Length: 197
Image (cartoon, rainbow, N blue to C red):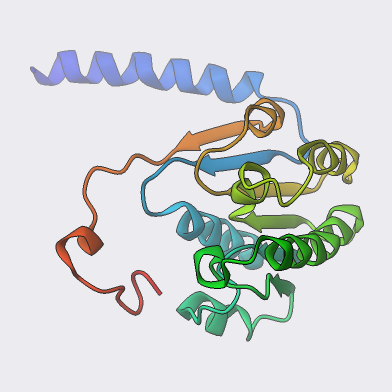
């Protein structure tokens, strides 16, 4: 592509983007849903946590499923004064194999998560692996949707997990699906510190 064609193309692109930025005038808390079978949903949520911390925002994190797994991000977040975290005590549900216990622990974790969604001082709430709580029927979807709808107007929420329900998709402002193309684990490579843990 010639320089003059490239410049004209980029100028048209700039005009379009500038116009879209000008039209985006609504300022409110949004819900971001990260779903799909690929790796990186919780990592993306962590990136948003880092952004929020950079602005001095207060954050509440509820981690479902992975509660007993030690990760580098947990070690890092423990040092941050503007973040509160609650972990579901069961860890992975295939380890416990006890639906009644998992359901009780999900409800306990949800109570903490719901308190974050009611707290006007919390700017960002991350509900990590929440989608499983709905698909496994550990939590009532409508109760979750109601809490999301009643949260403070400027509060942002990030929800992660595979197989997001239609209700979560419909309520979210931004939905991204992470696609699984290839994963090191399938080649018998164990989870690596700093990348997977």
